[in-house]
Image (tube, rainbow, N blue to C red; front, top):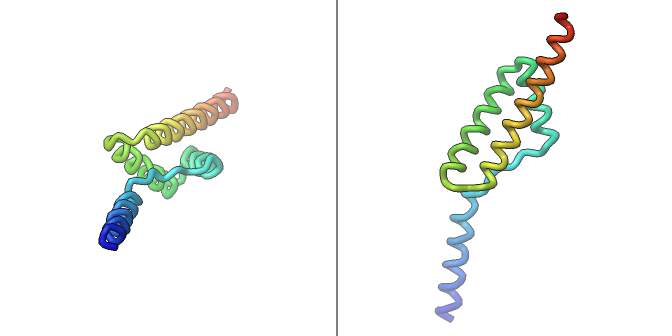
Length: 94
């Protein structure tokens, strides 16, 4: 009986401590929407993006590979959207 109670206590402590370390992943649609708003010049979207990136960078420093992958996806989306936006601007300007 004592072993069962100890097992339950240890298991619940692992579960309670493990939830903090979860990397928050953002859906592709949400990323695209937020990035388009950033390129359009929305400051609120830029602030949301900055918060997300800061969280991912801190988790990446802790050694979480999921955070690194998520950060790379965000940077790729933003650079792609900015390059598309610049191409559109150049075509209009010429």
